[in-house]
Length: 536
Image (cartoon, rainbow, N blue to C red):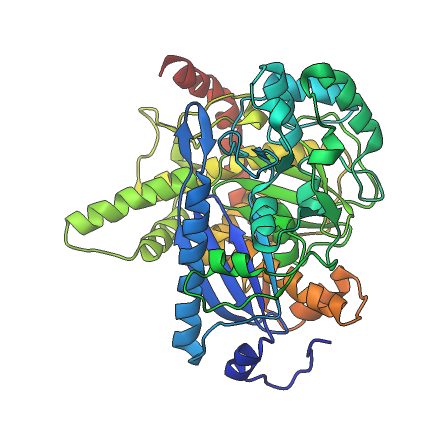
């Protein structure tokens, strides 16, 4: 049983005793690790930068880079913990791995990767997604693993008959660390539809077999998919080989309990205490997704809505935007380079905070400026490819404050379109709680997000730690279950969040009206974005 008493806990002693949990998340631009105490206290943070690459028409990450960045992240965490508490990280109570959902990772019987990792960002499976959606009677996004697989079948790719394992990035890392081919329920629900029991949907499996026909000799889909596990279930232990992969220095010892690997949408739900019905989580980073926990199952063919589940299997609806803060970050890097060229070298986070602060000084509608943040394709906007575009008219205001507000608005416009479609399907939410790197500058981001949604938005103190902290909480939840505690995940999270500061910001009328004006212009200017894609 974990210690949830209110008396102070000595972090150094707890770390030495392994009374901790380690959460790791492989995000789009950073691999991050959080070492959490028994009540979710953040006692150490590690990070390593990386980014996707466009190779042979696919957005991808090479798997050798995955392990290089994981080791660098773990080393950074160990250094942070040693600096704070004077302790080495040799063991922890439990480990959990999360990563970007969806995508396509396939291996043969010898564990050899058959083709490069195709990430969630790719919009190359439109034909497959349309056929699967029609056959299953529900929306199957291009990002989902089954859409990538069926597209490879439609394209007659040579590797298809050799497939022995189809998994996600979190599932692959977990398998290398533990030897277990398993997946958390939430991440699994972004691979292939689940039934109400949390198992692969048998009807959809049969219809897939009928569609794929003889193109899949030697395997059935159910045989190449991972085993699905709910939050709290045993998911293996860190092997000696896995420990060496994660910490090549040999400091981390094997035998550590591991919880089911999860997707980033689900760790976002956990990190915002949004796993109960009528709660919702906003995650704003390289991509943006809003996930609403539902009161009942939702079956829809609306292409704006993904139907997934929480780590414990509650139905959830997700509006996913392929493009989030990448373009905003790119402009911040450009301004940081200008400052450095002028002799005012500034930390990147400080530059980001300064520029976001300027956004609050801009005109509520962005001064008539317009921007599209589409670095890649954006299905919600009907775009197979993207081109970041900034434009202005002769009569628009061209001030830094207006420019920065419009860059933030551009990152939120597609999200609003998705949420409007969810509302039209009857999805009702009592509380939106946000997390992600954007909320390191919480006061600015929170106000503008509230304006875009026209709803109050809450941010918890640990929002900037994001999914890695959420994954650490899932690891702690596994420790509770291993000790015989069978409480629901939502009850566990309520206890964790009871002592955490949560700030809620209501939308301001002028901001709401300004964003509505921007969104109307955004819709009228969308042909400009399409022309940019067509002609460049």
